[in-house]
Length: 465
Image 1 (tube, rainbow, N blue to C red):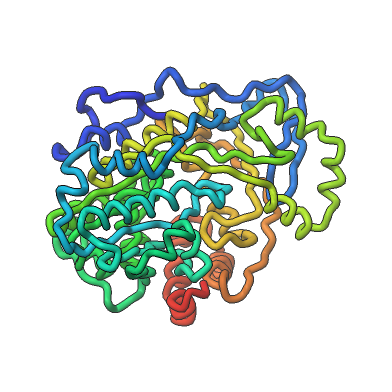
Image 2: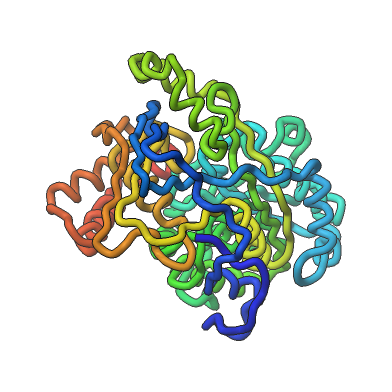
């Protein structure tokens, strides 16, 4: 795991016109300054968080504990960092040079679903507000701006989710338009010169200036991926990736890059990408899981057993009230894919843990939440996605588990699908069970059946699921 610290050569097997920073994501090399796995005394008890509980695991001498390194030094003024990035982009012209007076600007944002846990003080809120203020100063006034909320196939944002996108004081003085993407809308506009047939939200096609403002968490989330998140359902289903930290083998990255190039031939395009810090917890979990002293303190906490005996809603309420902090360590601007690649590389170098050899068995604690917004109690499908589709794909260089190895998911896998928000998950789960799905083709067929349900589509368009 990890990422390269600098440019090296051109043996990246990418198209010749791709920026060099993108090549770094395609062919990973592990830098020497990555953090080692957390040391652990033989046979000590390891507190492993899952659901709303802490399991005390007896780790043997050969156990490897994968914990993030301590948070890096955060940016003191995110708004100032955004302004500097827009004036001095990695490539291309600064924002003020590409915005004509009276221009129509579309600011593309994604849900702040990653990382987990989030924080009310998410720096993306400040970055979005600062970018929109800079657009206003450059000539695209607030009344000519559209804030496009591109949530892909996730539940369409409601009023509560929209309130989380920008600071309250900025929301009160913003008089532009807010649009929530609908992947099933008949009003989507075809982009004929993309690498494949795509239909996108009209706000992308009709703007004079496009500015995605995102955080670089994976190759699929942020940057050009935010543009793809405003496309049709068929394109979104094709946005796959074997590793979430490498561009090679990622169909989603290629689709997003093709869309970015197609849009750049039509409109001015400049992206803002943030590198987020490792989230930090407060209260009794302060320092967990990166601090060895905190790990031992929690493992020997005298009331830990009593906490596990509390009813589930009480435990979850206590955990929700624990303070959490999320900060940014870097801000970059430039072509969306370039800024995203640079921000993602910085994040990998700061947050990765080096694994000396591949594992025979890996145990993953699944939290009592979902990987999408709004947060809900996980069902078996969403819990499996969080562990296998997200956590186990955050690797570089090579897959962390040996061929024929075992992945243990620590979760209760409660078969509850609240109506109506999780009905698509229920349909997928039941279709997979009914067909006895055991291979990717069977699962793809079950997914297609679940995605063609007219009632489910109508519920999605209404923002209910």
